[in-house]
Image 1 (cartoon, rainbow over the protein chains, first blue to last red):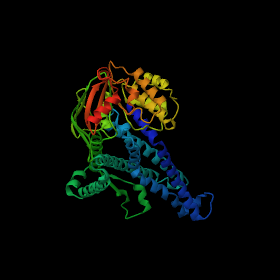
Image 2 (image 1 turned 30 degrees about the vertical axis):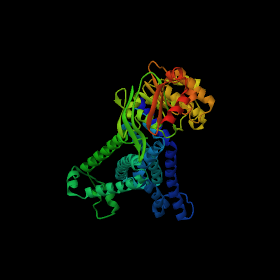
Image 3 (image 1 turned 90 degrees about the vertical axis):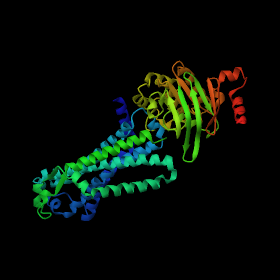
Image 4 (image 1 turned 120 degrees about the vertical axis):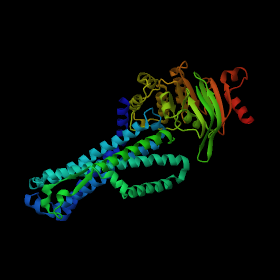
Length: 270
Length: 231
């Protein structure tokens, strides 16, 4: 247990400054929204109820925050890649360690996850701050809005983990290639990544894949949001998902993670 | 015992080791000497399980040397690499969490012996003090094999002396084997029990230092020159 906590702490401290930069970027997105909003209305006004509710320019405050939240699908991937690249410069220091590669990589993944939660948490707080003046007006929709936000956040976290593991996998492949084919490794890696994406996209369009994953259908209903009258009245059936797809993605991620650990254990050299 | 059986190792097109057969007995301080690029570091990395042979096998205590061998081998790299965010004390503490056999009390004792400030950031240490810290981290482990790759590289005579004293004071040759590569042969000659000469990835010769001194009346450097000239 001490070894695991020691690794987690080391990996956290290794990336502490980068994490601070990410959090500052989140704050910058918040500030940018306000800057755009103030520029749009031309001057700073006291937030009176009427002005807040009926001025469409108010929406602009949310745009940088929503973009920042969306970009978080790549957060864990980038975070892990930065952390692994730091280790890559002194591989013997990282790999001369009796902990298994699963533990070494696991610590990176857990750190990436914690950093994502911190960054995403900050963005949600900032979004909520922007929402406060609207709260009384949207109280009727609050339950569904929260559900919708939660759904997107959970999906962003899940996707970010999946992409993070993919990045981890290709980092290990790169290190194997580097010691075997030298300067051609980047080119071969790019080809392999494209092949990987093509295979994944091709697989998703096959009937076998659809049969495999399209079970355990669940729908998320947002009945109160119907009154927004956004589309054709089928808002309550907007989000449909499959447990099979979730399970497939989870198994796929676990498999890639185990392969990455195996590659580090058996193929990567310092 | 560390055993190399028909070991060859290539990096891309370059051959680093060529069909090496070698048995390193336990309880000795063994020096591996040779010119730059002769394959010394490759041998040590193979013993530490950080690289794999292209051909043949390397075994430590009859177990194939892979990453797991770090449980019984401590490896000091020739590279000056650390986790720079740590202080000296934090570095020692981190290592103590990773290696079950790491003796924290011994580490602090060697740290004091090496006159290292526990609260100084590693990134702010002089090269000499970073070298001392590497020795602290290596000698504080209670392992049967201590592998040191160029522990004196770039260090001034004062630091080299403290490293040698550290080796003499904190190694238990009843239970530990030390394998060391160095260019500072005279510095460690008095320490060594056995010497291995390597050139172009091939072992040229292997001798007991005592035999060399008493029977052949030669210093290691004189013998090295003779072996190199004959090769």
